[in-house]
Image (cartoon, rainbow, N blue to C red):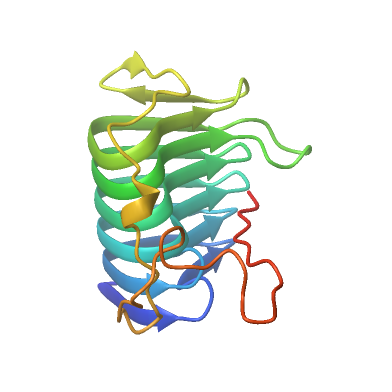
Amino acid sequence: IDEIFSKNSASDSLDIDFSNLAIRNINISSAYNDCVDVSSGIYEFKNLLLKNCGDKAISIGEKSSVDIDSVEAKNSNLGIASKDSSFTKIQNAKIENVKICLSAYKKKQEFNGSKIILNSMSCENFFLKTDIDFNSNITLNNKRLDSYEFGNIYNFKDMIISNKDEKDNPINLLSGVETFNKKNSLNAVVEIS
């Protein structure tokens, strides 16, 4: 496949299962959930440009093998997640404005951990660089990365809520939302991961 372009998805933008695919260019802007979600297959991606992903920029799972030449991911909860016996190889990753840059883990009991191998990576404006369980590992330039390396920033006070059409709302989660609403009940934001 030469090119996939998607904008304003109501759920996962690109969700592929049980396939053997090569895709040259993927450009996704604004997905309510994951920008790219693949499982149980073999995938080759040349260039990925992913921005405003509600959950993960890339989610790789269930014994997938993924080879990525270049990925740029901006504004998501998690940059790249590899789970459940998956193997992910990335030549160049540029990730910014995320809670977690990379995550490797075992989610389902019938699988093992996963592995991410990177040749080159930059991650800017993040809270946690890597989240790795004891079943998994992540390497950068043949050096195994540690879990729980905290980032330079993750200033949630500056985060703006965006609509699916990428128009910013004039509020952010902390300073712009009142604790109690007009009915005198409590407003709350809950993150479940």
